[in-house]
Amino acid sequence: MRIAHLILAHANPSQIQRLINRLAHPNADFYIHIDLKTEISPFLSLASKQVTLITNRVSVYWGAYSIVQATVNSFEEILASPTKYDYINLLSGQDYPLKSTDEIYAFFEKNPNKAFMHTLSVATEWQEAIPRVTKYHLSNYQFSGRTTVEKYINMFLPQRKMPNKLIPVGRSQWFTITSKHIEYIVTYLQQNKNVKRFFELTWGSDEIVFQTILYNSIYQNEMVNDNLRYIDWSEGNASPKTFKMEDLQTLIGSGKLFARKFNEAIDGNILDALDVK
Image (cartoon, rainbow, N blue to C red; front, top):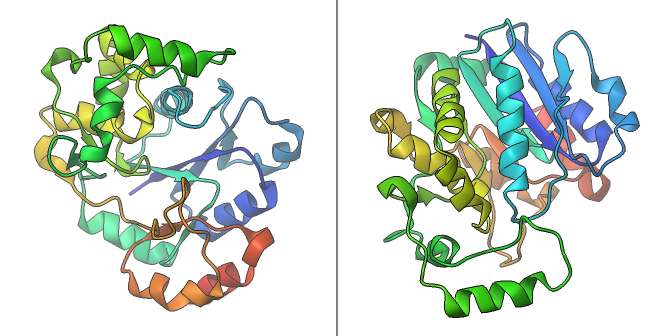
């Protein structure tokens, strides 16, 4: 069992190093995409025999397709590696494991060939996402007056329809799936430019596109509607709760393999506690 951990990050190289150290394993490699808007020099020291910095970097903007492109570029570099992986684990720089590395490996060895990602139906289970796929969104384009242009486009153009008769599903952008699944998704996007164009005009497409492509494929029966992450949205903000020591027992009791998000500058003690758990 060999795992590639793909980390998308834009800050806090010391916390990323800590994440790498915590997940270090003889059969683990790390690939790190640093937002192109971020100066790369503070992150260069992360590179090692088992840690690769993604070269085809993208400037990432919140809610934009750019994070999908950054992820796809990273997937392509992983797939091009001479090392073959059983699982590819997509993490943010503010994720952290809740289980030991041995426990994580044991879990995936017992659950081969699965795709652990959210597959909530946009039509019935995640209806707040319906406007993402029916309206036009220009979040991937950085220009003055963008929101005004977007408003008028949606005023005069008919509602969008999913390309290729895809059934949209998703919720969380973070997941753990096999290299076979990754290769299928990357190839599908390469061969179906209309799907890429559609999601370039979709807000928060990172939470839908990968899940939808795999759900509408022959691999649907290998998908598990659980991304193995504990994420707390109870504060009602645009970003999930940042965990502190007061959340320790909740995190441990969640039964998940990973959680987000953490910030060592706000509370590093919670990471210390998880390290010795």
